[in-house]
Image 1 (spheres, rainbow over the protein chains, first blue to last red):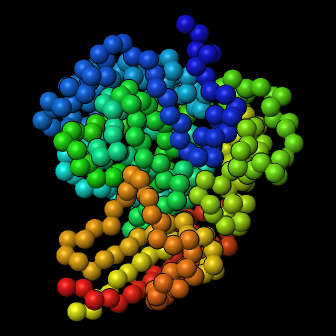
Image 2: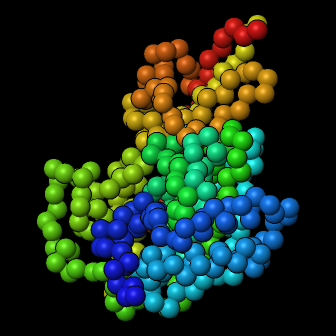
Image 3: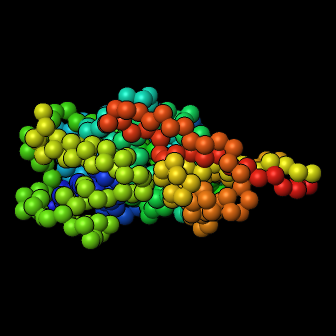
Length: 261
Length: 89
């Protein structure tokens, strides 16, 4: 089957650049998600990177056409699936996890690396969903500096149906709510990386959509690349920060378009 | 007995009139935890000024040593720390 129909649109790519996440619900065979969730329920220790050797169906998640469509769109046709992956099990009764960025403070302002978070079981609000803050992915903040933040305007809890895959920018601020349900909340984290810079757009690109005039009257409702990159302000930050964001977004877009070397 | 309540407010700009982006309330009770919520139904105030009118006092103003580099973005907003002394059992 052609991958083309699963590629992202210009608007979806622009929104990923701005907000730092993109959510899909791939179609899996009947019982697929339930089987994985049950196997995870039964694990007594965390196999770390070997989780997909223990629960082998997980390999079908990253091989799914809809998943591959996103990966090609944002990382190019020769994207790399990193061997590192991790099973995050949020146990019943476990407390919230504070905001953090993964790894150390060497951030990449281009779209060269991101995560795929697969949820084999439905996540209800009381199950300790992952919570992300759209727009924070270009902010380089040591986790200690986030210690006095709790609720942030625009934060998005990933309350999702079984089988959902959420692609999140590697540097987006994230945490979890507490799990007050009797169920285990499972998430498998995959890591994807770009191997080569684009020489052209690798998504369903329509050059005509790039030439829309700036619409100052509908800034929050932008439906085209130029206006989305220019006006979106998911955090509601100040003008000076917002101007910096615009520059970063435009550079990330040009890089994906194959124009920035 | 009077105890100190704390309220961290992360605000759009250093002005006390600007919009609140984030908040963390700290209550002086045993076992209290401020935690990330799935549904934040009640934002306590729209601005620092609104908190002032409700009796909160500012005990720390935001640090303003913003990076000069025009590309760097770090933490979100500017942080005010507020306090209120109230009777607690």
